[in-house]
Image (cartoon, rainbow, N blue to C red):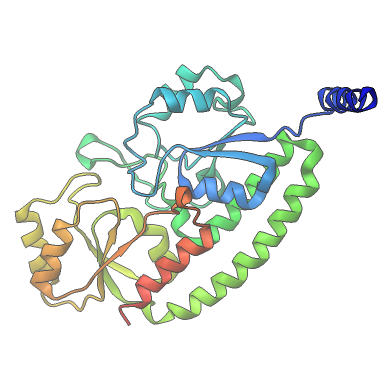
Length: 299
């Protein structure tokens, strides 16, 4: 009995002095970056996504729960390019976490590592919800995912120096899989190259560029403003003599304008999931596979 008690005490003492397997806390502003961080970091990271796939990342409240998560974060991973300008600065101020403030290694903006599209030549209030640094929805181009993945791998290696080989190994495996998938996806949607489309919002700008589709019209008169009936009628007239392959819609936006135009023109509406359903366990490749299959359905 005495020996048994001594063994228990020994085990407890060893547990007390053994180093804890600490993980890096990652606060991801959007699900796509939570999913990418998981690909690169695996079980070295504890990841929290501040938004879901059905939320507009422009309009989020700096809730107490978000502030608490940001306060404990070692790394903040966001889109950048002013996508989170309406809520992230307030969140960072209230969190008071010096490690994730702008300019610090713990602050990572994905858009800093890609070529941005839709960069305005001038800015004024009449232009609506336009981002001065360009279109922030960079994750809709698969090639951008690889660029961000490499940059994120390097940043994690700076923060978690002892695990450089871990991050490099996982990045290389991801890069190989993603490159193979991109080649397959390109073959599947090759028939869409050069096709004319209409979009509701400029969410899919990078995807359209990657595929090579021509955007003839955007239903929003200016970004972030719902189209009026007169504006829709004007677009209908504008498109009356043009062949349109599809009307591209983003899942979290009201679909009434796109459905109206579809009924008026006989053009199919293709609604694409805005991003990864990270909370539901979806991966980046699973999400983009759904995007591709939706596009292929118009063939």
